[in-house]
Length: 203
Image (tube, rainbow, N blue to C red; front, side, top):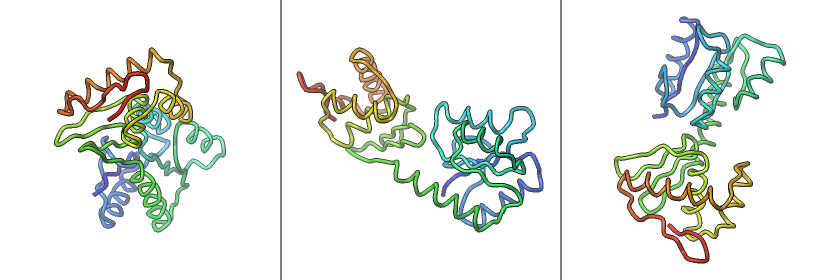
């Protein structure tokens, strides 16, 4: 069952959302980890925009803003903060559920399995057995490249990182490979990344 973070300052609306989500097979939570986040803009303390930016520092889970704020400026700020969708209150329950399902389906497609490893591009975590490790954006893309092709030239990896707006040189790649090896070793996946001399790396 997918966990959905509900950040809503109006208690009656929050309860309504939690009941709607629960009735449709989701688990409403008040903090990460989660598979999707529903955020209001007006929040006590930090705003929904700030919360979205924080989520984006270490996660790519889908974010939907659900708010009474209707200006184009607020919508632009939301998308600039990393939002995937922006829904104005009062919301239609069926439309909200359809948009949640669409984003979760897209997120599921970002999970790849191989050699006993499970890599989630959405929350940048790799799992092996009952252990998992959090990865950086570079480490996530490098491991994705290796899991997808098994044997990757350095050029393959550079091309993948470039397409995803991540820029590294050869020294940075070497550092990232070593850190990735250490994280895999810590969760029991020892010697999973091999250096192929003069070519690149293989899983």
